[in-house]
Image 1 (cartoon, rainbow, N blue to C red):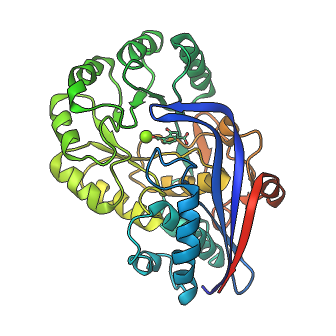
Image 2: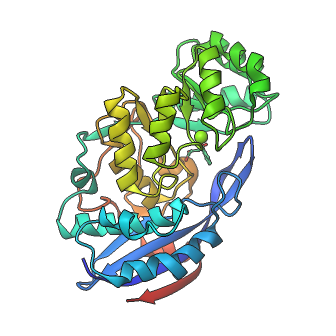
Image 3: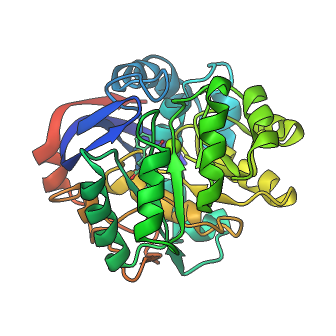
Length: 369
Ligand code: OSB
Ligand code: MG
């Protein structure tokens, strides 16, 4: 593949309803959409999952733009790409900045699959024609409201309900949810809101048969999570702490988790995501696909990745209509009975709707080889 041109677009989309986590509330989603165009005029699409604020990790929309413009695109233009897996090596002189790397790598994966006339999931080695999905529900203004929201998604057929927790919105809330929904697959995500000093509170969650607790402790920690896992029964799932296959190797060795949430952006792209999937599979660790409130392009990449065999637990890839009045892809991602039919069209399998993209665009710039 000879990439001749890359267009970076800064988009801003309004969420249908605010999404509250232990670290802050999202109302809008600002992100970079990457279009990579080859010598035949074929376009591949990628989406950066970095937010406007560095509260989930240290990357932002602006740091991603800087990394892409000043470092990653020049490296991409330096030589043709025979396979998207080469990009990891090519970008290796640049430390971290996984979300920026994943955004451009994702565009090249889409382009690569389109050139081969194959859906991305086939190129990745996926096995499924449909995937099971859950939904992530933000912190609500009170428990009654939370129960109403959960009820709606249970009625819709979502295969797993994830609620966000933080100190003061945890044990009592989960108890109420369990009282009302004794049998639903349920989990809680703390987004690093606790420390080992909260061990009694975290142990108190053991009685509610949660599928897992996601990232209870610090975003960069593996050691304390291992200590915690030895003292609670609920399986720990790591999100923020996992940036690479090396992190997963260490987490497994230490016993820091029993489940891994894979986000393509957080680990630097689909190549690393697949390596993490494979290592987890070898070690009997189930994985699932996390979410970053993605628009359609990011959502499509998540669906393709989730077809890999060891994605045995429902992920956070909810329907487009859960987030947006109008998504940027056609068709939009729809969920029937808690499942998404994996698209069979070449590449990411959905068409990017350029009119919608333009309607959300704040700024765009073209870079040429
Ligand atoms: O921790 O998984 C998370 C959203 C923003 C930042 C971090 C997280 C989340 C979610 C929502 O839980 C996932 C989604 O619906 O895309
Ligand atoms: Mg999480």
